[in-house]
Image 1 (cartoon, rainbow, N blue to C red):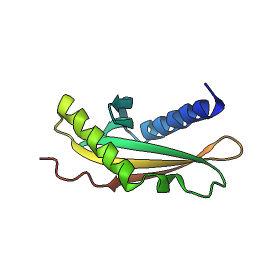
Image 2: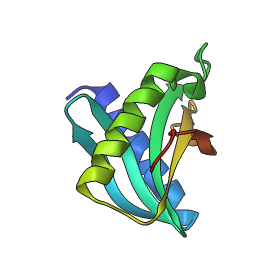
Image 3: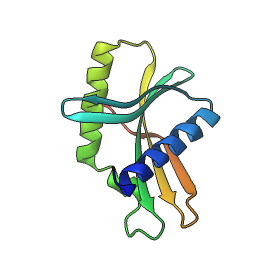
Image 4: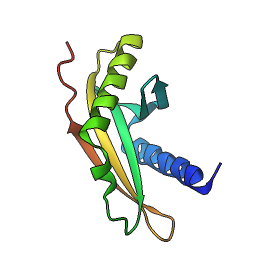
Length: 123
């Protein structure tokens, strides 16, 4: 695999560690179904968190947070619904986004937006 794949895995690990330090329990990483993927599924208190991770290099003209487009959000929501059909839960679903900026020294600046977008009617 190329360097960008390795960097992506490093970013995902940094995001998972960040969430664990904030008290999240990681349940799944890279949950895939046909047509979608969720980077991290975690639990914190009464929430089942579906987290999207986007990474950019320092100086990139586009913020990692801007990369979570409405189309991407719909794909995440659909994948989350499929996850909940397979693994029913009484926890409140929530969609978070973590934006990672890789600095020149290799470290990450992480922005975590809780409840970044709505998933519609869960009933």
